[in-house]
Length: 369
Image 1 (spheres, rainbow, N blue to C red):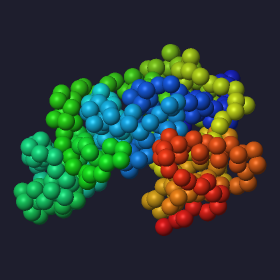
Image 2: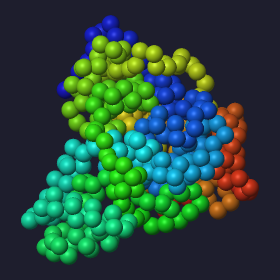
Image 3: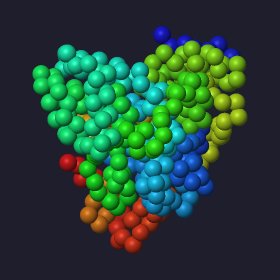
Image 4: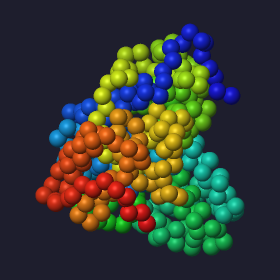
């Protein structure tokens, strides 16, 4: 059952939570942070596909250019690895080596889902063999699966590959992930790629503080949704004396850092073009601080997510680059002033991400597969 605060705790409505979260997410105003510092502050960027982290930073940073993320990735200061929610994230090297061990309990639970396909498989031996294979040379998941299947021919191939991914911190080696480059997913261990050992996982308390700095105010369940971890209530309780608490309109207790920004709910929020799978939309159990109830599920179709548009700080539509046009599909009516602002932000995004290109900006229906 969700714990609630006393009736005297201040109440933050969806708009107040929206402005606070946008400020933490560098979306209320663009930041002068470097790409690497922003990835640190945001505790990683969702990166199921190659391009989303670049668009995520373009929406958040002043004077961003894709090379500012691609460069540190080529230099192995930033990597792509499965961490939070069992999804690929772009993390700094330091966070890769600490956050990946932190979420190991979630990876262990994931292996359990596939236990029927792993009957007779010694997971310690599998991890050692997989490590030897990928550290000898980066391997595709297909190559790794086939090598492991030779050792355990009666096991389920998919289960073997997932067990390797869950027991080892496997990073995607470049050129995969670099802007303007192509490359299939090939994997090695984080330790081998970065040239240093994984560290002890940080105390959950430290990560709670980082989560609140980037996503707060938030509930225990919100952080569990973001991280994929469970049983985080004790960490919040240990931190309670140094935090402040609020309630949302449903009475759910929200925690926050005392000095974190909580702007006036009337603070203007410019439009922003976000990529698919942006963590802004995925990191709270209650997403109404960003996603109006009437638009819930509108940015998804099956397992496919669309790039999203924020207007006045809330989800207001989806977008797509189609041939030589940026096609914007608003979910509801936009005023002329809002359309002008969206068009201006679209022109800026195109100039940052596709300099020299010639794109029309069209309001209509995004071409869906």
